[in-house]
Image (cartoon, rainbow, N blue to C red; front, side):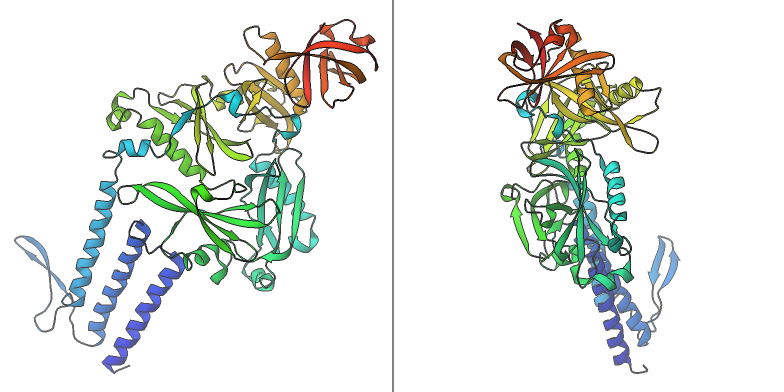
Length: 550
């Protein structure tokens, strides 16, 4: 260690190990358009500068710098008895550090919103949509009732039933909402309980993932023939960010999401990011890398080429940010802060609905003045970012939630954040009502435009029927087009709901259930199988409301 050359070699090795460790854990992209790259470059230069200074001290070729006060302020000097620390390589590194700082400052300034308000606004393009044409009315067996919190409870209960897994694995709290075989479900993988359990089980991989049906609340634990070996929580070279970085060194990655394809094969969908404003402003998605969680097979796709079974490419945070920029800068930067004419913002929450087998983010748009109403709402396709705006003035989601809770205030239930449905061609909020233990007890439908129109029930069918009843009573609220139906009754039954008798019957050759209130006709109690009826009906799907008999 007394040999100066050995000291230098050891110091150089230590510096290389530090830099390698920084890269191993931080995984910055080798991309000049990424702020993470410049942060990493700053750290590398700082390590190199420390190594140069220590090298001069350890080899006895330098003396420590001193701060000397002069008439012009403090100045760093070194003794004339030895060479300067910041000469040669040291000086280059100091200049380099200053240059990186300058790039950071300039990069932030040239992409600032004050200079590019129009570019930030145009990151997302809203088209005018027709709600009844774009959003099909769901049947009762298609309405999702499970939110993320409920899915978490159901998943924990299911894993607890698996004695061979519960001691070694835990549940990753992703619960990604996707459409699987035309049904809304939430999926999430298992993860190793801790590092020791990873050592014990990593050879076979994670053996299963959870799937929660958002309509029936049925929870399935799908066991795989081969375990999943690639995930964000994995270690070493099977850690997903590290696995991707070493194969795509220049790509800027977003947060991955867990999905399954139509055959049930698990995948990680990781978006790749590009910056559309300045050096690193206006974050957007340029494509995605799909990684088979079992085999590690991977493929990059541009946004337009991503397979249609993929439901989540854009992150919620990115979509909400771009919607806020779009609403904020419709009339430029200064109007957004001073005049605020026509300035909009997203509401305080969002949810998802299924549209044509795609998952769309729903959120309301409201004025920045903070009133309790929406000027409309948007649906954003989470795979393509196709965005449609629906100019339907109505209640903000929180107001609708309070209205639903008011209907059952004696029970003290809390409403979940609503999802948007098409009910009888009306934009309608649907929400579950939970007790203090977080268990779903009731359901509510609330009209978007008139949030005092609320239908609640112990089942989705009952809540919808009550909601339709109230809409029927509202003379100025249309409940959809009607049609005349004639046929022979194949079976008929009656039930009493909330003190009102309803008759449910089918016609020969059809599975549609027709629902008629006793108030429609005094002949209803006398109808039986084999009778021919002619009636006017409203609605579509498996259950149709009878308006009148002819």
